[in-house]
Amino acid sequence: MPLYFCRLLFILSTFFVRTQSQQHPPPPKLPGLLLDCGTSAPLVDERGLQWFPDGAYIGAGAPRNLSLSGLFPTLSTLRSFPFSAGSPSRKYCYVLPAVRRSRYLVRTTYFYGGVNGAGVPPPVFDQIVDGTFWTAVNTTQEYAAGMASYYEGVFLARGKTISVCVAGNAAYTLSDPFISALEFIRLPDSVYNATDFNESAMGLIARTRFGSTGLPERYPDDRFDRYWHPLTGSMHAVGRTHNITVSEFWNIPPADVFDTAIVADQDRSLVLQWPSVSLPNSSYYIALYFADTAPNSSRTFNVFINDYSFYSGLTVTSSGLSVFSTKWILSGLTTITLTPGSTLPPLINAGELFGLFSLGKLTYTRDVINLENIKRSIKNPPEDWNGDPCMPRGYSWTGVTCFEGSRIRVVALNLSSMGLSGFLSPSIDLLQIITFPDQFQNLAN
Image (cartoon, rainbow, N blue to C red; front, side, top):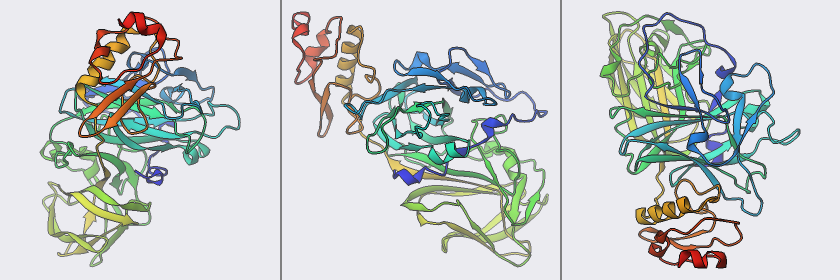
C-alpha cells in the first residue's frame, strides 16, 4: 500500500487517558495475545486485560524504556531493532502461534518517544505479515502532536504461526525501527467472512461511531477490542438506548454503537464526508450500521457513496441492520449521502472501512523446514532469521538467496563472515544450491 495510505489514519490518543470505570457484567475473555514490547514483566490494565512480555516471541532487538511521565504502561517501553546501512532490508519478526485457517486481528502500536536520540526524527519503516508487505509505518506527525499511532489489519493464518515483522527501509530513513505493543486476536468465522482471505488481507482505514462523543468504544464493549472512534461535527446527533442482539450481526459490533446516530434534518438528505482523508484508487471493504432511534419504529432511505447507489430503499428498524460491500472502488475524498424515502429522516450509526491488499507468496514449505532445522543447529543464528525466509521480495534472511518461480525456492545459502558456531544440520543437503564458508566444511561432511 502507498505510504500516504496510513500516515494520518491511525491516530490513538486514548492511551494517555485512563478510561472511567463502568458497571458491566464480567466481560468475555479476549480471545488473543497482547504483547507489551520491551517489558520484562506482565501487567494487567484498567480494563482487566493482561499484557505479556514480548521476549518469548522474538529473538531480536533491544528493550528500551522511555523516561516521559504520564505514559500508559504499554507505551513506556518498546523494542528497538538495529538498522544498518550495509544491510538496510532486514526484517525482524514476531512469530505467534495460530490456528491454521483462522483469521486474526493484528494491531501494532508505536510511540517513538525520541528513543533514537535527541533531535533524531521518528524512523519510517516497513511492516510485514508473513510474506506480505502490509504498509509503511510513519509516526512523524502523531509524535509531533504527542500521540501514539496504531495500525490494524485482518489476516488469515496460512499455517500454525503468523509472523508480524518490522523492517528497515533506506528509502525512508536511516535510524532504528521499533514497536511499542502488538495485539493478536482471533476472530470468529463469521466476522468479515465476506472477504476472500485466501487472496487478500484487510487494513483498517476508519471505524467510526457516528453521533458519539468522548473516548472510543473498546473492550469490554467490543469483545474483540476493536476501536470505534467518535464522530459528531456540526451535524444533528441523537442518543437512544437500544436492546439489540448483536450476535445476529455477522461482524458482531458492540451494542453501544447503535445508541448514537447522526440524523438528517426533516425532509433533507444527510451528506457525510467519511473518512476525512483522501484515498488512493483501490478496492475497499465497507460496512455501514443502522438502527432507528425510536422503539418499534422504522424509516426508509437510499444510500449513495460518491453519487453511486450503494443500497436503494433501505428500511431501518429499531432492531438494527448493516449493509456492506466487499470490493467497492473508491478514490479521493468519499461522500456518503442518505436520501429520504419516508416521513422520518435518514440516519447512520456506525461504519467500518478497510483497504484490501493482495497476499504475497510464501517460501516453499520444505525449504522453510530445512532452514529452520539449520537455524536450530547453529548456536547464534542471524537476528533476522524469523518469519518467511524469502518474502516479501527484498526481505530475505541474511545469507539466503531465493528464486521466484511457480514456487518460491531457496537456491543459495552463504554463511560466511557471520561468526557462526555450532554444526550444520543434515537438512542442508536437501536445499537446492548451497554456498557456505570454509569453517563449516568439516561440520557439513
